[in-house]
Image (cartoon, rainbow, N blue to C red; front, side, top):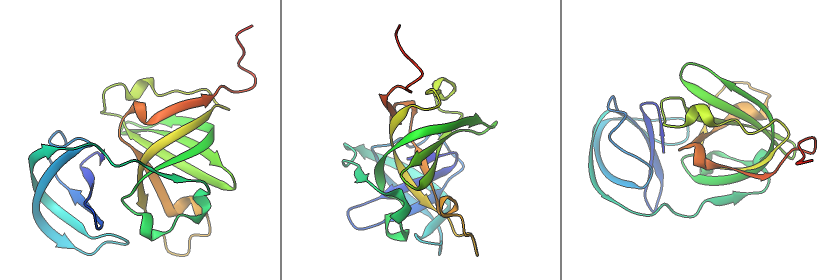
Length: 173
């Protein structure tokens, strides 16, 4: 999955975050070779100033169903997951569209790069129950007591959000 110039790349053993200036080179499902400057990251290694070469395509693995996002830990960093939650807020910045989901006791921020085609159409009604499929990006915030600050869900496209249930106030009558 891509988020601006950051890519989350995973093989059968682990994930790595890759920073490249060419944001149009890889898409979800692309198999890539990456060369760059390694450094340690918070939960996964980082490859900076990377050059990518697309070498193939394959189907994405099925997402891991996360029933309780409050339990997400660093071992899920870079993993494709699906979280069901209620949309409590939708807002945009010049660089991204953010859906805030309530999933049990957890608040889940789901981010979509505004440059992705159709990103401006991602507006499920407040109160909708949605399935959000994306890559977990763990963050290191020292002394943060807010569990929602521990990670973000990076969405690959507007199709990463599926409305499961319309809000109770939205009826067809």
